[in-house]
Image (tube, rainbow, N blue to C red; front, side):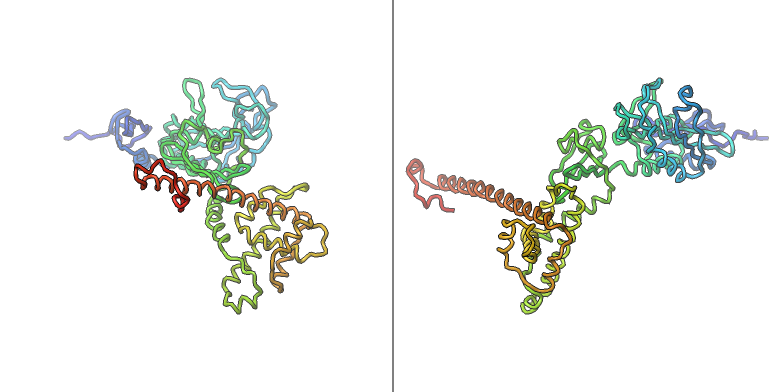
Length: 473
């Protein structure tokens, strides 16, 4: 009678081990033996799929500890903050976002035994398998960073590295997917990794993450006082950057920063700008689409001709479409000018970049014509300077209902006068820059012509005088 194989075919206690370029799945199994290799692949995701087919479904809950320091250092508190339990990730994230701005998260604390300041707001996850084998791990610790000023500017959302050595977590595809979602919903500033009772922190964008694919950390857009900086993290952890003028939307600079040149997206942006102390604000990634669209649209607006005709004259000359496009841009200019003045005027002065932005977007001709039109329609208003009034009278403008409508502007005449002065000054500066560049280019052409004549002249004539025709282009 053959011997009956009573060994269990159930695998359990999975462990993924990396050796060189191969991932090994080890499992305590009566069938295969204790800690035996049961599967291997060059892709960690394949190992997770293998385990997912063999591990029972887990019940997952989330928890929030409003202040973990009340548990780690209870002597400093009257009572511990209660642990709050949530059945869904969305509920836990909403509660986290509600508590994060609280002032206590920005308090300066002592350092714990691992060398970090004490964690305050905490989000974690717990799970069970068929009602047993419970497990839990903190995922996000909010703590004050290195700065001593009690503000939120240096508050860090650390991904707690405990999960990296908790086999019940880092081998579970579903739990790791939750981390991926947390990175998208909340974002991590750093990863806190623990070894031999000590902790080190690594900027999240530099952490060599083999556990889950990030969602939102591979790109960032930051705004400084003068520019937008688009950043993109590459496979080798270098950062590609593009810098756009935040008024004209023109590409100012682009390049690549090696990994050694930065510690975070913010520091990469400051390095790219060459401004170590620049104040930066994170922008939604949709800003990129608006910015790139503006880069494409600004030149088109500048190239559209300004039709200085009445509707009847334009119709006689069969300029219906150009006239309609021109008037649409005229109306857009007036709306943009009005809204930008209202949004940038600080009660004392206009933003100096306002005139430059309007000129970059709509061109010098349209900007000048429409400002002159407003001034011409207000001959009685003494709040426009005589200099600007003489300048405005130099334009020959049409007179009909449409151009009358374009003169209506609900902005204080004093501000319009200041804007007109700045526009005229900016146009003069641009013209001066262009005139300074032209002689340089002309000199290059003259020098090339001289070299050409020298090459063509007979050797014996090289040292003789040359006539004026020798330099003609």
